[in-house]
Image 1: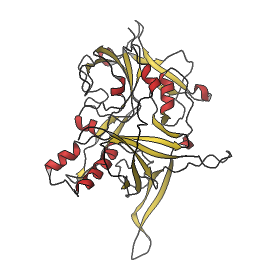
Image 2: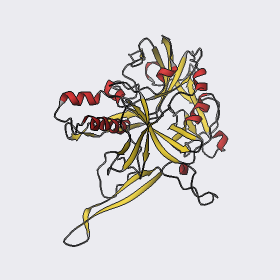
Image 3: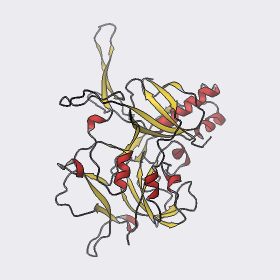
Image 4: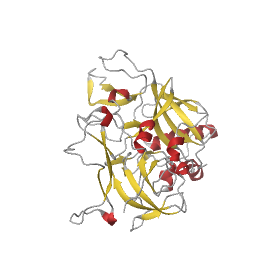
Length: 383
């Protein structure tokens, strides 16, 4: 039950709504959110329960444990066009978007550095500082950029190449809808019950008015993995039970590109960029690292690493609804997707293919839910 065996494609049939858990309040405007990994896990588990004829596992601890044991890893955005599926991932935190720069050099690369003897800092455990790879005058504040890169761009970045910015209009657009309740006695809006929801429109995207072509030639879908054999067809995903179509894919578009895999030959270290938010017991720091910042990666016995540097853009509040207890789940702080961790290999052998898009969160259940999926690239440790 815990094995991830099949990649699935989800084709939304209308804009999807994923809320952060904030209450509806006067004047509150919440932007559209991408789904948490747990939403994808809940979707596949619900489908599996339907196949078993189980309408609920709230009062059956054995069935509840069996459902939670199912691993489901997602969710990833992909653009679908005549040239195929193009997977998108979170922008790496170590790609600093320059302000007012040409597209061909839109990002400054941030890397670990040794401090000079006359410089000090309060980084724990002797971590290296992170700064620009080359001297840059007046970096200033970062420029605006899309939160997602294509996987092709990530591979180029991993090889040391320059990456062009993704225009915001090329990603799924925000679809806003206003909701109101009518007071039956006055036939006017019921005070306090006017609110707005924002969803993601996965259809063909409208281009700026100054472009010749009005719409893109493709649309957007979601990808994730889970157990093989789930029934394909219509599913309800996200808020308001809007419909999507679940399909099993014959190949694996989430696999590590072959050219990227070859770059790991002889690698003594690697960088992890989180493809999904990660939940660690020590906040920013993985709980499987000891006080010397050394430890074995979860579910990769024998591979012992030492954390040399970390770059995190922020944290995200993760919550949800507990169907068994019928109440909100406790809010957890998760490291935001895109965070970068530089590891030096202390013992064991790195299997890049096995580590690609596997979860690195502390708790086994968080890993089953897909929190902390890892994109990796080789790195040469510095003294």
